Length: 276
Image (cartoon, rainbow, N blue to C red; front, side, top):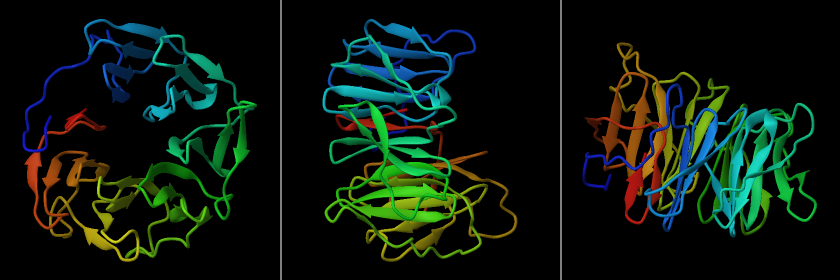
């Protein structure tokens, strides 16, 4: 899908019965998919595919650090492969250590953990090291990054990590104080930030790196007649694409107006197009 089109082209293999796409990554001639129990990789633009069975697959996307690709496996560990080969290896986790989200920052792999905050992977020892301040008692549900900040959606708010000073900024002051559990934070190509809470019909948008926030209702004007919920906020560069429980919306003016479209849950930008 390109920015100005609603047409989609099939790029995946046949995943098989009861196997559903959960994540995707594209770089050069390499395309990677994750499904419920498999990791798929193609090194020739989707002409041929190899797959690896895994017992459990997390819902997070792939993360690239240098020549290594990481993928979380939920409670089973973090999987990785080097130079896009199909030889996936596992970084075992300690007992009962669950991964909620992976993200790159400063050439390091970061991961969110319920109740324990953000951890950093030390590649020399293959150990996860605590890398957070002020988030130790929060559920970290989602991570995304701009050129300035690493953003974290948490059980107790939305936080930003300043990449230059390597410090956590104060919790974002969002319009609604009654939201207790933030499900996602998403950053556009130009640095606009969107965040939303669990089971809500609205999201919050900042166009100034979190200094101020607007409340955006993609499905109606905020009235009581709306029963749709925000499931995912994606960006097509700087175009908003909101996945709802019953309908999907697209905005080219940061939520001032909306058109109804059909959209996937996850979208990956690559080479001027968006795959989902």
